[in-house]
Amino acid sequence: MGRTMGLVLAAGLLLAAATAWGQSGDYGSPSTPQAQANKAQTQLATAITHAKNAAGSAAMAGAMSHLGHVLNCIEGTKGKNFNASWGHVCQGQGDGILTDIRMERNASGLMVVLEAADQLALSGVKAGSVASVQNAARGVAALLQIVADGIR
Image (cartoon, rainbow, N blue to C red; front, side):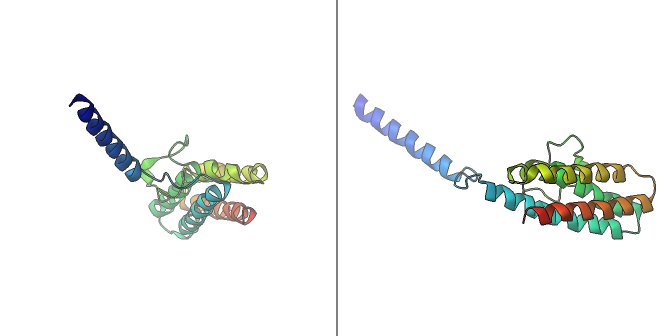
């Protein structure tokens, strides 16, 4: 009786573990360089769209909000300048462009441009006029497009 109970208990634990494993996250997708590139490409597309939205926004609040979205996409939630109050339009797309771009074979050359976009976005969200935010956003969009073209 004790041995049968032990087998039943072991089978139950195995079944529970298998069920939990089967329901846990994305265990079947390896983090390959191609998967990382797709994450970076997706986030870049989102960030470029929001940089263009910021550049075209006539209201300070809209321009700042969209440029804040871009900064959050670039840095990801673990970035030192990530600000949840701006919203995170790249949520679920990756871990931030700065993180996900690192798997690219030409990442070192792209990092200089990406870091410049990050700093310009940061300067833009701190700017005191809508014209300054719009100009920063135009520059950020152009820099991010260079990065996007470089990983294709």
